[in-house]
Every structure is written in structure tokens, then in C-alpha cells.
Length: 336
Image 1 (cartoon, one colour):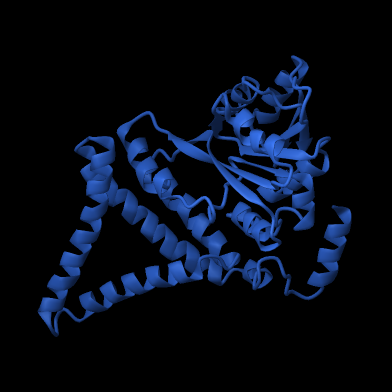
Image 2 (image 1 turned 90 degrees about the vertical axis):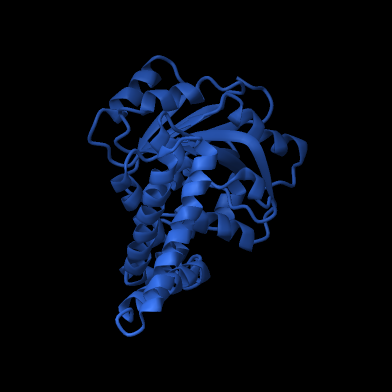
């Protein structure tokens, strides 16, 4: 255990019996060990909690808390129970690089003014399909602007005071809640730093169905939190224009040809991108199919989120608009 800066590492889990051992083994094999690990279970009905308790019985510095609810509920409960002021956060289903904690904590030791440290993530892919998914769903690190990058909860560390200042993770959101949390941290002027070498490997989806539902709910969460409205508006306009061109093909057939050529060019872009990265002819097929699955997931998910009852909560990222919301928010802050 380290004698310097004290670290609490938090993670939320639910029904992770097939991945929880790899996850915990990676945390317990860090070159810099956390002083404590708090795992909050959101209501597992498999052997997840039983396996975590095995590790506790064998002496691992883990505290297990049952906190039924979404990931925000679990993270907030873990942080309330944290013994230390520096919080490192990751997710189940991931595997932390052996140097992840050392790298993501190092900036706090060198500069006390830093409030949030964002790490990066890479895909865990054991086949061509998984590699194709990774190419299309994880941003190229070379294109990241450190000044605007929003960390993911799978690889981030922050001061407990920063968490307290913005009222914690937004518990009204079940998807993309970490994006809202990070935006709130930026809005109050906290100091961020990006450490690309603090890497967590995340499990990618294994089929098109999993991809569709994951990005459907991501888009739904963005709509509920009023995030990326411009990006989604342009996305809808693109498909709306295509639908218009197709619908009037009988009136002026060249428009149908234009729509078809645009679609071919659009899909070819992703086919080539995936092929170049994975160096397999299968990428020419999987690239367009994965992209279409994501696109239709986004179209349906964002539209669903716009009409969600939760959408009224987020007109300004955290300002509650429903009746009695201000009183609830004051009560929540008091509990923190």
C-alpha cells in the first residue's frame, strides 16, 4: 500500500459474474494499489456479489455496498462512503492496464490545483467483428483535443470536493450520466487534465443487436440530458433529405440515383476506414453494417429520449423543472 496520496477506487456492478473476476484481478494487480476499493452493486441477480465477497474474505481491500438503482446512484453512494479525498473511477466489464491507477493519480501529486484527470480507453477485441466495432466506436486518440475532452467514468479520477461542488452524479439519468457530470464539472470552472497513458480496456459488443441497443440507449440518454442537440439535428436532417429524395423518385428519377450514390459513398467511407484499420476483407462488410446499426439506433433512441418523462429535468443540465424539484435538489445537496 502507498504511504503518499490516499486513493479510493470506486466501481459499479450489476450481473457481472462472468467478467467480475478479471475486473477485480486487474484492480488488485495495479503497480500502484488503491488504499480502498468500493464496489456498489445495483441489484445483481446472478453470482456477482457472491464472487466479490470471496475476494473480501480472502483479504482484498474491498468494501461491497448494495445500492439498487442506476450507475449514478451507485457511484454517489460509493463516494459518500469513501474514506479518502481522491476518487478513481472505472466500470465493470473493463480491465484496467497495470499502470492505469499510477498514471491517472500522478497529476494530483505534481499539481495540487488539478481537480479532474481523464484517462483513455481501448477496445478488448478477440475477433474481426470486435476490432471493427472498436474502430467505429472509439475515437482516434490523435484527434482528441485535451482542452475539450470529456472523460468517461470508465477512466477518470477527481477530488471528492469537485464531486460535492456539482451535487454528485445526476441520478435522474441512467445513460450518459457521466457526460452530464463532466460537463457540470467544467461549467463550474474546475481544472481538467488529460492523461492518454492512463488506459482502461473495455469490452466491445459481440453482435449487431448489442450494438443497436447500446447506442439506442446512449442516444436516449443524450436527449434526456439535452446533450449534443446540434449534432443530432444534423444527423436527422441527413436522413430526412435521403428519405425525401427516395420518396420523389417516381417524379424525377435522377434524384433516386443521387440518393443511391450518396448512400453508397457514405457506407464506402466506413467500409474503407474499417478495412484500413483491421486489414481484413471482412471489414468491408462489417464496417457498413455496424455503422447502419449505430445510425438507426441513434435515430430511434434520440427520438425516444425527446419524449421521455425525464427530459423535463434537463433544460439546463441539472436545473430541475418538475414541480417540487428545487426542494428535492436542496434536500439532495444536504445529504451529500
